[in-house]
Amino acid sequence: MPHSRRISKRAGIQALKLITVCALLPLFLNASCPTWEPPFPPRLGSPVITNIEITEVLRSGFYYPNIHIAWKPPEIDSVPVRYYRVLELGPDTAFSIVSLNIPGRLTDYYQKLDKADFPPVTSLDVRIFKVIAIDSLARAGDSSESCTLYIAPQVYKDTMTNDGCLSWVMQAQMGQMQTWASVWNMNHDIIWTGDITEEFAAELHGFNIRSCMTAVPADTGMYFYGIRFVLNLSHVSLKIGSFNVP
Image 1 (cartoon, rainbow, N blue to C red):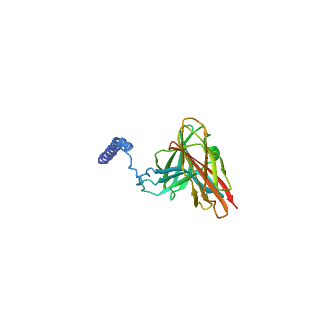
Image 2: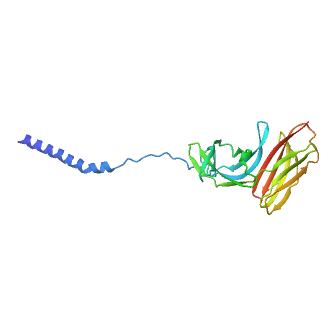
Image 3: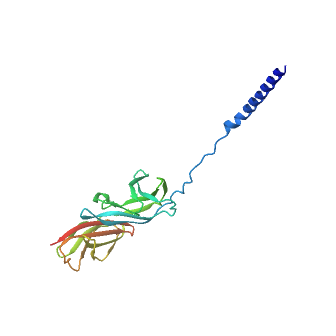
């Protein structure tokens, strides 16, 4: 009999343990272990576009018109900028990447413009850009505000004479127009800049412009001229040509 009582007591204790485990099991199943997340620094802020223009850039021995975009780095710089991306608004009203990996040490971008990239003589064009910074953890920061470049048609029938006179035709658009020319050498030393010609047009027609250097460059070699056209102080274009001094 004493042996039987010991067995019953042991069985009761085991049963009590089983009941306790069964009662606590739902609590264990619903409990979750705390997760650890690394303390990532904040994402980069947005770059600030400071300038957008059309300028001349030397490529393979010749100067070409280029869109030039300059910006300031993001104010939030808790991590280094690995590279920048330049985005342009497309005809489908969505931004797409036009330059993927500009090194983080650089803060400007050049995009070559061919003749076909300028609008026809009776049209205007608009190009809209954004800049975004990618940090060293491969995370994209905030994009910059959109920046718009208004593009006018190039002048045409440009000719440089042997006596240093440059002539061209600017196609009049409705409104105020300005045009002028400059000449530089291969090292981009400005040799001459002509006076600004201003016209106001109420209808579409061409203006013949002529501007002469005070003297032909004394040194022989290749020289370049750039003719700028500005419409209503907003739309701009640049036409580049070259001539040789024997």
